[in-house]
Length: 434
Image 1 (cartoon, rainbow, N blue to C red):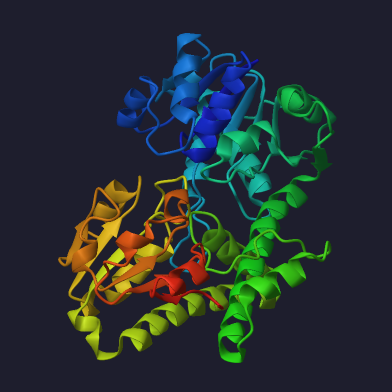
Image 2: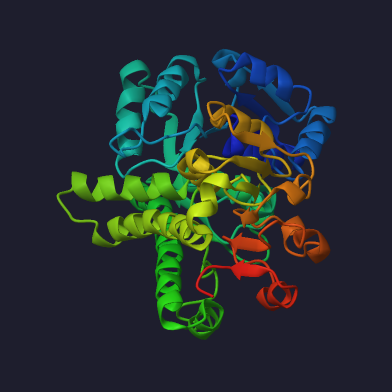
């Protein structure tokens, strides 16, 4: 099939690369010409394991192309996937400006047929609004519309696309459903994962799913705070409640809170959707508030444990990305922590396997931070270690090197270290809910 992807971010590039790998003729449109030039060489503008290799392979087979021209990108296209961002406005509402601009461009340049799938995360009712906008410029009845929300995890997006746990198709037209079935057939062989809904349900599913997961994270973090006050152990509590199949063990790992480009934005988006319909979003609002409290709780723990010595301290901090296997620092709890305490310490020495370039741009105004190319560098000059992201290389550190910390003290914001091993090595360990 001839498939067009509009937007070359995480969702767009992964979608395009995976569909091109099957032999489809894929064209990716992006208005950023510098990004297009880079993509044409098989280089993704962000870190996603395996993606560069897929892009280069698809390019060599002439199955994927990149352009800034809608006219060229839409030539004889059978299906168009809209994958542009919907960042939050200051009031928390999703900014649909990029989606609207795409639909105007599609209307002016699309051929005589095709299905437009919105993969971007959008509020309920957006698809219908975009259809009305499209029809102001193009009244061709052969152009069909559908909602096809994505469920890709950064750092494991390719695997998520190839082995989906569900494929949501929101469409009012049976022909659109058949086209979607054909596109996704290679990823839907052993078990039927296709779920057909109306457009509004498909839009809401994405917001509801992410907000529910964010709520689980906020809940276990709230329980972890209670554990620290009552001598309960969050690891034991987590295992006890996670073994209940009605609850499940996933997303019950305590930490600094949720971050990234999706959860904070989608929780806010759901809250706005409730408000727009004159309803109270009590649970979503509570999850958001609890998430904010968790980071402050951790910061207060650092301040309390270091007493008046904090201003004289050098901190070694591991992990800057909002989660492992990505260089994405959007709504990163590590970045927020750095901004909150940088003025209260002597120096911050920061290490991350891939997120340092993005972090430098975000933190460029802070004078007392220094970036490390190796995680143990400067450890002898640092008073204590703070772990913010659970990269695999942090899970089993060299204890003899950790003992070189001046205060022999660690603040583990992801509970990834062996508490007993640290204590046995005479290292003061501060975890979450332990």
